[in-house]
Image 1 (cartoon, rainbow over the protein chains, first blue to last red):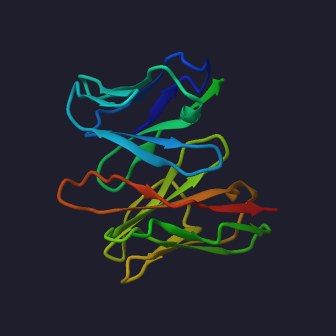
Image 2: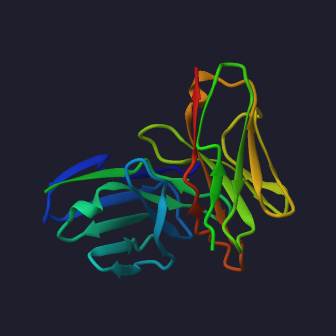
Image 3: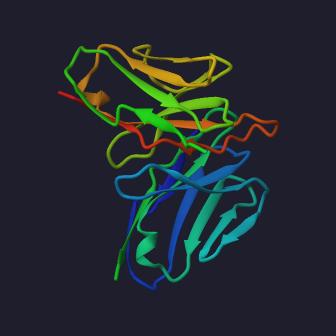
Length: 109
Length: 115
């Protein structure tokens, strides 16, 4: 079945450094979604990418969908302590989202 | 505008028992999906309900069953609990819409511990 993999599993950065997490799917995706889960919290929707090669920005966050629609990335510029949490990518067709295992970001002030 | 509400927030059961978890979707949403999240893992899709029917199912045994009511709320039932069923159970609602791409709104989850 479809698999979604994320790397790295953990990332520790100093506040102000950049951070990138990568997401790869075993199959072509119709869309990719990104969620953030704060420690002890639940996943919260960040963004959805639909088009091949699409790039979207949300303040310091940049999301990219690969040309082949099988990979995606999330880049955070100048991390802040509020960025702490686990970032999940998720792909799939109507009704069934497959989540990656997530990348947990720790930010040292 | 209430978000997704789940109950109970925490519960402890013993092996072999049965559990029922409840979910009320966000106002305006008509679809409910259930996910299991083990510690340190991503959410795993259990099943999805739309128009009171199970529409999609993940790789979970028949011990996991569900229901959706006419008001779109949903229940997740797990029979014959195993230690491995200990997890955070997340309910997510969405609006099916025309595009078909479901953007999920998650509830805070029900933390199940099986002893």
